[in-house]
Image (cartoon, rainbow, N blue to C red; front, top):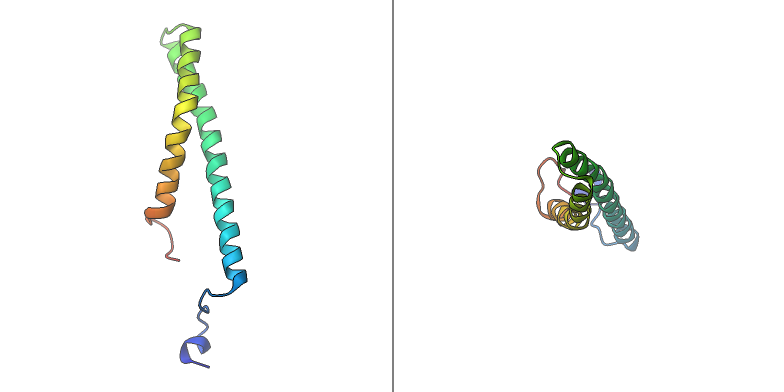
Length: 95
């Protein structure tokens, strides 16, 4: 046994089970990002419609603004979230 193995280090990630677990974790993170995107947009849209309405914009126009925002912003938020997950390592453990 090498000194490294005796020290309790993690073996090289060459096994099939390691790859499978890693793939499952990646899929779970993807689902989490999708659900987070949807919940964020619902609340954000409700806030946008409410603020526009209370600032004097007619309800029809406020609703159209909210629908437009609901269709466009989730795409940009999801891409932003994935970019951070893949490339920005601030506040995460190296792994």
